[in-house]
Length: 106
Image (cartoon, rainbow, N blue to C red; front, side, top):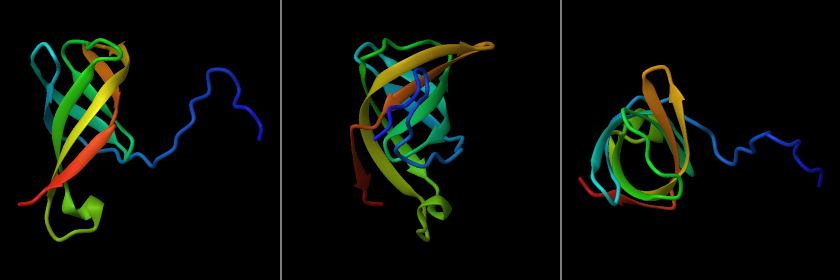
């Protein structure tokens, strides 16, 4: 199997460009954020303040039924960890894995 060139990212899941409000709970406090995109394995948030790479986080996403192929929106509780932070204009972008998730009955 050929190796990927240095600096090239490998995607293992389809990204959905979703802008969803979310509250991210870190070990230190709650942060308001807006998703930029979401996949089965991770999420990219736009936030006012950075988080530490490696930090464990928890958050819930209200996924639109149209994206999931269901007749109604679905609440998903997620836990993960921060893998990257970068500054983009006045906002910070925080990329995180989704290590565990569960669908919350509504």
